[in-house]
Length: 71
Image (cartoon, rainbow, N blue to C red; front, top):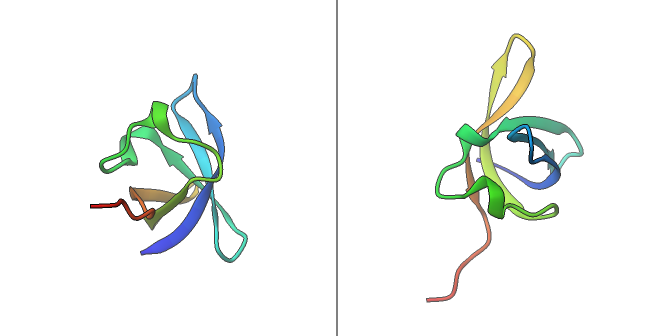
């Protein structure tokens, strides 16, 4: 899994960009979220994801929160 933070959200369009730990930006669509609600995402939120290479460039898939929850 790759780690990063939500960099920019385009709420009206249902997509955004994630900044990876090595400084790259990866596109994501709301349908790629696993256990997260798009409307509850915040910029700078930590996430983990997989990168899928597509014809238009890399895309984040299987996006999950990387923040630990208290039991």
